[in-house]
Image (cartoon, rainbow, N blue to C red; front, side, top):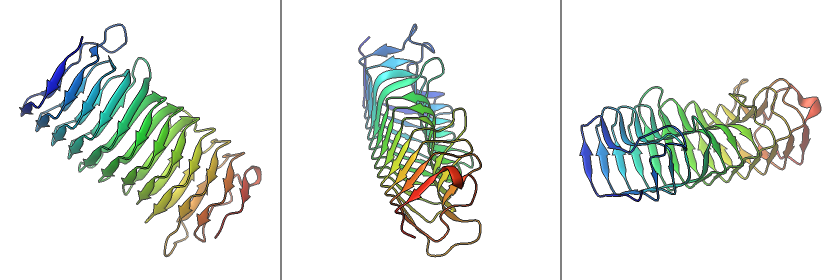
Amino acid sequence: IQARVLRNHCTANIYGIHTYTGWSSSSPSGSQNMICENICCENTNSGIYMGYSSSTIVSGNLCNNNGYHGIYDSGGSNLIFSNNLCLSNGSAGIQLYGKNGAVSTVVVEGNICYTSSEAGHAMYLDIAQYCKIIGNRCYSKNGYALKMYKTQYSAIIGNYCTSPMTCIEVSGDYNAINGNVCSGGTGIYLSDDGSVADLNTVSGNTVVNFTTGIHLAEKTSMNTISGNTCIRSSYTEDQYSILLDLNSEKNLISGNLLGKNYTDNSGIATNTFVNNKV
């Protein structure tokens, strides 16, 4: 199937654009589709709702004020989501959900996502691998700016993320989180939600206005945290530049520019701190 869905205005429906036919690769929505430059606003469910797809481009769409998602995809491979504007959607600006198989080999680049609901996330990838999340601007009023759940072999690079809760959260292994700017709440959180975050690289990020700059959850291990800048102008006793939870072990914390509270004492004996500037 090769469909071109271009420059349509889809407002006040259940879905703006709906390509859903199945959950898995055995019943895909199609391949080699283009969904570009559409306006999908004020729909009760999602602006753009896609089933399992492959080799599809979703670009330049305006998806605002929809009840659940600006753009939702239930799985697929070789997908590109670029330069979309997803504002004030109820659940998520962009959500990719690999229910019956990982979202794989996906590029999410140059999008602007803002959620104004109390629990909404700007961008959320669920069970993803070999993805590139590059140069997006993600804002959340009280949810995650960018959440990567059970993610492997993916690159999160050059994004600007702000949230009073968590700017970037990643669970899973072999991911690179590099060159991002995070403001508010927890800047970068290597999580144990669904899958413990091991063997990840967190490098060259700047975290400001945080409660916790970089946080490693319980049992996370063998991560490299290097060359990051995490500084506040002042600290309370429960604000940390880098925080390691109990049993977070065998991590390398190297060459970071940190504020005065750079860790608590949990698990510190099994981690390596070297060449950090405080």
